[in-house]
Length: 139
Image 1: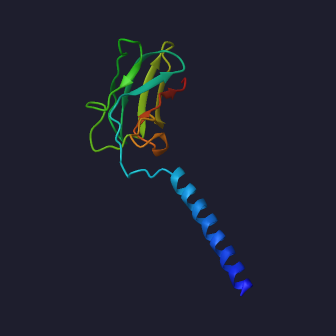
Image 2 (image 1 turned 90 degrees about the vertical axis):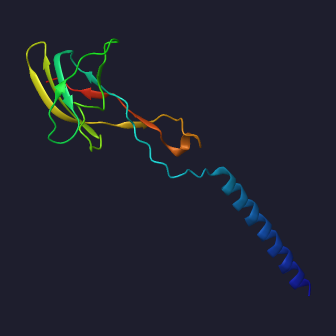
Image 3 (image 1 turned 180 degrees about the horizontal axis):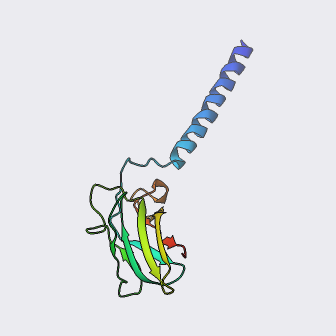
C-alpha cells in the first residue's frame, strides 16, 4: 500500500513539473498572424562611382526609363509607370548607367528587403518591410 502511495505522489509531482514547464514555454512564444505586406516605396540606387546618366525599370524584358536625382541627391526609382508595368513582383531592377568617363553599364541587380520592426504583434513577426538600397557596381 505504501508503494502505491509513493507512486501516486511521484506521479503527481511529475504532472506538476511537466505542467509548469509547458505553461512557461507557451507564455514566451509569440503567435504571428499570417499577413502579407507589399512595399510600394522607391528603390534607391547607390553607385560606386557617380554616373552621368541613369535609366532603370522593373521586370524581365522591361524598357528602362531615365531616372533623375531626388532633391536630396539620391537616385530613387519609384514603383510606378514608366519604370513598372504591372503585374510585376519587384525582386530585381534593371539598371543602365553611363559614367563620367563614358563607360556604360547594364545589369539586373537583386533587391533585398529588411523588416521595419513595426509589426503590431512585435518585431519577431517580420513585416512590414522596406527595400535596402541597391548597390550598383562600377562598370
